[in-house]
Length: 321
Ligand code: ADP
Ligand code: TRP
Image (cartoon, rainbow, N blue to C red; front, side, top):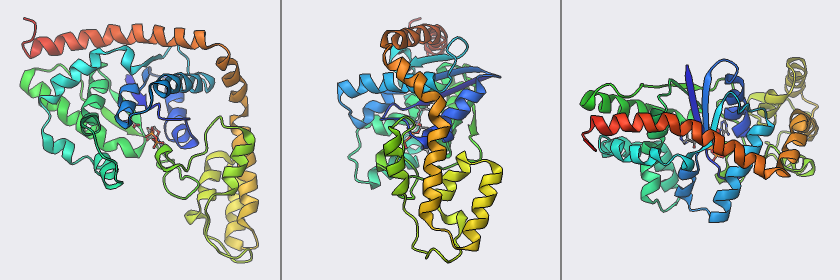
């Protein structure tokens, strides 16, 4: 089965990205034909500086390699190294009703936040559909926030196939279970755009500082607390053993426990969890040529597939005949 997913290089990857997406990406390699890419074309919609565009793609590559991505087996590339996908975006745009994009909640949310939208942001789901369809993906593992984009992709694929013949595989989404939404330090969804993240590879000191600042309610130490409403507990669930978690749950419910105690333990568990990967990450930083070679090799393998699908779609639409 072909599994495909993209990750936006919009800043240091955080533990929400890891538990919500990367960990599953890495696990899926064992059983499937995996295609993963760095969505740098998508990242342009927020107008980062050119230096950031270049550096962030390398950072994401180093993060994935350090966390166990096997690039012998998995195809891993930078989206913009396979520009065929932008041509397919245009072909798909011409079968995409405006209403389908106007209904996309991620776009509406960004506009509601006061972001002045460019056309790229509006058309973003069509580029995402092209990413998925050009590699004939069967399964797209993503966090719950991306579900609608996969539905849009399916809709576009069906419309295209009905109009021009069965070119595209209609993909299924695979919503990554158990950690649908990882909360950030302010209790909202952890996200680069909210400034509430804990990065996977940020200095240990800063992990501790951020964890200690996680927003909690003002229940006094002696009173019972509700673990299901606490971001610290939600994060403990990701890194504590079952026995330890059960113990914390009991302590929350009994009262007599201060949030700072749980926070201190959470910081140590997070640091320990990522410790084995830190050294690898540091080694990669001093071997950027190797990182670039990995990307070049991935692009070559991805391009071989993308070129074929694009040729089929062009032909089906009557181009170049
Ligand atoms: P951000 O919101 O920080 O910009 P992205 O949108 O780039 O993160 O997300 C990359 C991947 O990580 C997506 O598959 C997304 O669903 C997942 N993800 C991001 N934040 C979280 C979170 N807080 N909880 C669970 N999954 C997340
Ligand atoms: N939009 C996705 C996100 O923000 C990233 C992405 C781009 C993607 N293209 C994709 C994910 C294709 C899955 C498949 O997380």
